[in-house]
Image (cartoon, rainbow, N blue to C red):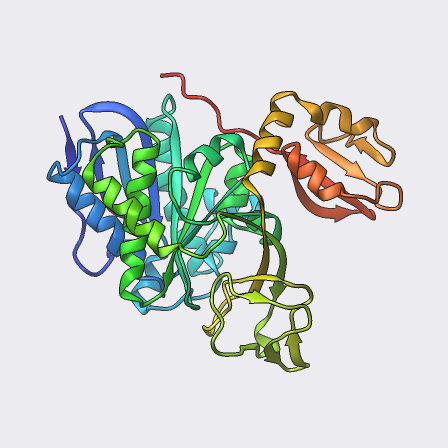
Length: 390
């Protein structure tokens, strides 16, 4: 029997926005909306999904749960109050939030509340395949896109949705949930729906959620609803690359007084040296050519902009073969490459010896790049999400 808890009204007051349990057991999808308080489209999108599932518009297999991210910031309509909740997912901060000490700031309390709900769901559904989904929007205009940790399991989830797939976000941003959950072997999908207040952004997020639910077998793939949502996303993503990889992130602080020049959009081509912004030091120019992503047109946030490059889908097919063959076991035979004696999943690379195509080779073989240590490049083998036992 399908059971549902009704979503709240227009204002997000409770951590649990709503939950629907299908008639049959199956995948568990936990959606977190409003991690940033100035992104209202996420809560709107999950309410629509909850309402449709609750009345049986499509039969649900498994469980769909929607959680509010930063309740305090949502109430204020601000990105965050004290600290960015989307950058607070470090092992130290998570451990502190799970402890008994008083929260150090508003977002520490919000993290504690989120972890309490997520841990309860993980405990309830320890034998199920579970997917965490973050819903976001951006201050700059452009097409919707998605991001994952580059595991074979999570690629299959992302390819169900016809919007651009971005790789490498977790390598350039410290403290994201994408980064933290990858280290726990959990699947996370991040969906960016479009500009914060644009009316189509909630539609994009809702459409992407339906395609994800269909792709993992939670709702019928051949339904007219899902087909219409997928077609809507295909039109929204016209002209954008199918897959792109982050090659540069421009970090900023409040003291920089960063101001993006007007008129930039997601996936707009930029040339090396092109003027993109101004700060206290003067002009900010593109350090390389590529496709611009997430230009910052809001007051808060540490990401000025990203630059990406398109990736051919054939490279992902090649990497799948290399991972299946476990070619990575031979990487430590290469000059300048050795296994970390303390962390068995980590590999240390001396860039003065191993100079050519180091990062692409390790990416192909299923590794992610971490912060350098003692002059060496550090890579960690990605943890594939565990297969469900029931």
